[in-house]
Image (cartoon, rainbow over all chains, first blue to last red; front, side, top):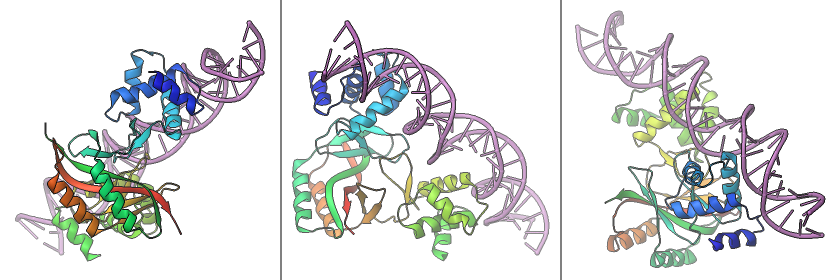
Length: 136
Length: 136
DNA sequence: TTCTAAAAGAGAATCATTATCTTTACCGAA
DNA sequence: TTCGGTAAAGATAATGATTCTCTTTTAGAA
């Protein structure tokens, strides 16, 4: 993906095969992968990549706002390549996390907090964590 | 607190000094403490408590819905003794997490999702993660 | 093509959490 | 009130995700 090279360049990051592969893995894997998922995926084409590299690259991509960490209640970090504003559906029964977008909802919430401020707090971003069950 | 003993009994958990102390610590500490915070606090009156006990008790309190884990994007777990529905304010610049309650907002969101279902998903709970900055 | 800082590789170290095994103590029943 | 069984606590080793350190490689500018 040429897009990835472009993003890296814009952020002043050196374009390396590892960075491209890791960024691409998070995009392709979609389901908010862990570092381990990413490692497994990348090993297919990059059998010699080092674990440390995965973590270092993920950190720098997060710092440069090319990825987001996904909040969760386990001790394993997960990542998301969807940078536009969205919410998350958390499954009660599994580790599954899905993205959820709803512009109308965003509008309602934004206009609510435009009127009603939280005192002592400057809002930057509001994300819904919607927990429940996926019906298949 | 007699309330704590009552809660434990209701859940069929044995009432032990450690469980009372740990539950009480999370209530008293308020700011979504980590296991380490809890350990430090408890050591004052319970100098011999074991780390494993902290984790085991926290797990069982979470399982029995006396505590909640707080979602976050670091690898250290945090706990909350406020079980009634509420949202969280996450500070961008620090580890601070505050509770935020807003009944009117809840009503708006509930009625929104009463009309507009998420297909393939049965909602259990909706919590806002509001990130931003605390102005002192 | 050369040079150099930045990045990747390798593997040890860290540290929050979990597991194992032994000892203790809660609590129901006698 | 004591007793006994079992759940829980204590002690400590093990695990495993992440970080750190140090060396080697490489992207990209000159």
